[in-house]
Length: 355
Image 1: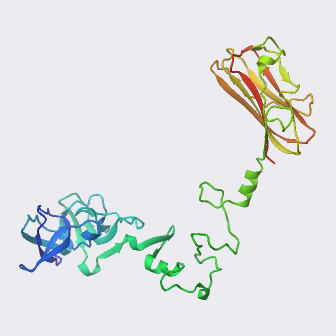
Image 2 (image 1 turned 180 degrees about the vertical axis):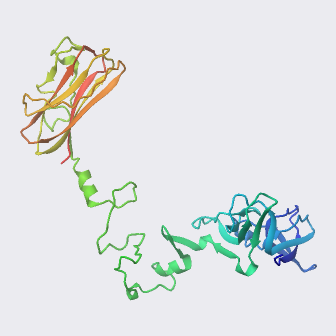
Image 3 (image 1 turned 45 degrees about the vertical axis):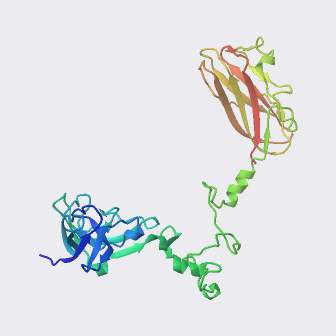
């Protein structure tokens, strides 16, 4: 049998400390020349470090045995594997999962390893001797990169105005790719070399030039009107006599080719063009298509949105053109059957310059 190391200690917690509880030394009784013990907890600095594990129940105000080295029996190790590390947990417990190193509320202390994985009372762990129990106080750690850490004591040497600041002019190889470099958080110094950005997904990301240039291209938005100076206006089918009576679009095509619904482009470039038809109620089973024309030509491009629903809908067709300043844009609505329109129906032509 392996040799065990034990310590006699007294329980003055007011409660029974049960077998298997991880404990720390909470005081000392001079009269008996014996230490007091209480349950250890890795989330409380005042209850660490742990000294060992209780072998048998110790009632209040009685003396018992704390095992600080050797084998511990009667532990539930079914969730672990042989040779897994055993750490101090919360409130006198153990854990087989190392606390996250950046969790500043926890303290890591390894007690030993699993030597038999089984349910209680058959599980066993091997306690390390007291002098080699590992203990790390997390508040002493700060994150430098995702997989690297500095002690705060050393990090102070890199801070402006910190104690015993290192003269960085004496450091070498800072220009090498393999050297982890950093910049001041307050941005007091500018970058002197090439900085690589990313396509941003967060407000803290440094964007690339390409992303900024792309975002800047969305510089002009035209609404259905005769020039960019008049960015308001909406074509309302109620006002058209093409194809049928007011409040109704029949199966004949409706072409909006006068002032409202025709846009003159003010600058050469690439434009995104869309037509939106708002319908508060539609006829049953109709086929509706939007068509967009440029240069007042007789050839219609037809990005088509088809819907046969009788519920309120918003229908959109979209196409991208390369246009010149002399081009005009017209829109056309095709319908295979009558569209019954009510008071909130309408149609809008939108043009957005993207390059």
